[in-house]
Length: 326
Length: 254
Image (cartoon, rainbow over all chains, first blue to last red):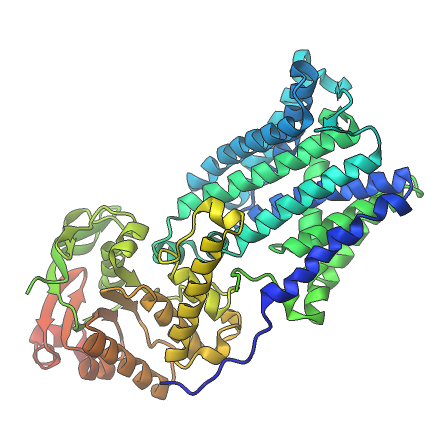
């Protein structure tokens, strides 16, 4: 019927294989970086998952839900409590953090399902985060309150996590697995359903898609991913403190999503890299560091409203987030 | 012949306001049925009631003999009633291909774990879906724009993509809410030709809301006229054209 031929589109899957090189090349970092730099790289890995999980809700599902620090703190405290009080191995504690984070995600999704959206969802989820911080502070019999919960030395299976290098390898493995799984999820019927809900929820239902199921799924997945990030954060800092999960932290997470690029997994990684390294760099200007941090966010959003990933998209369309896998 | 869609005394109330009052008619496969009437007559409310977006406060709606009133929109869609939206129901950030793939959602197999771990079965199902979506777009001469975000397409192309998306699952019944609004006259004719072909060749039952009376008169088999929520006439274009009540309520003012 038609003689129109589609222009040849580069196979996304083939080009995306380039991404696999990144973690392989990263394996040499412990050999060239000092302990401090390695700590910063580990923090980037933690915040990569924080941002990937948050971006799923903000960028892909399009919901203004700010329960991310709650998921992060819940993940960190789950690992800390299980390791301190129950002597649970770190690998199991990570799984537990993912599960408890997922449950927290489910609870957050209930508000969205009940039709609470936009600013109302924003304020309710922010309150959820602050409520959790209150729990960490006042549940001091378990959490040690504002002193924070000091973690015992952790091991990942047989590998003792007594310095930054072994932590790096474990964090890299976790980050690669979770990012890959999230990418598989997004480039499938599930990812399309999630993004369709963002673009037009009524029309999504008209295609036979049970939207409530995908709203819950997105929140649970986001909670699990950020819960795992929390489990990593607990071992990175070795002491879990309530202050780490306050309102400033929400702003940092939100900044990472927007600076990297809302709705983009590559953007999440870029946002985590940018907003983890820059504050570390600005530490040399005490008193001015927060100002610089704010200015960077404003400048990026003014000149790159679609985030750092839009720079890559100008170079090649393969960096555009796509929701299918050929 | 068993009607495809059977409406029996369907009423819809909005906070005491009667938007639809005891509407009764049968729609059949292979038939183009236009719904016309002045603004506020209840045309879109009728579509919303059939597709489950607003609850009917009275009456019954049967599709292929099964009751569908009270079901959620996605359940009604899965049963085979698909619709388009007056203000465009596309996903603007997604490409034409991804929009059609979303239309194939139910058709594409794949368990949650299979998708997360990238299992062979899940990837095969995805590839089959992509091949089908590209084939459907090609059929409507949309192959060349398959990989463009729909927000970058012209109004006519967007309408076509929306039609392709609703057709992806071979639905027995299509509800088209103003399918030619905003289209140029040649595009309108082409859209009506496609609609006629879908009904004539594929046997799909089509209901459409339309304000362009010429198109309605030349392109539909049956016309249903609503006024203030009530069905005031039903019949062939010729019958409706000569109906005094219709002339007074609607056509006379065109």
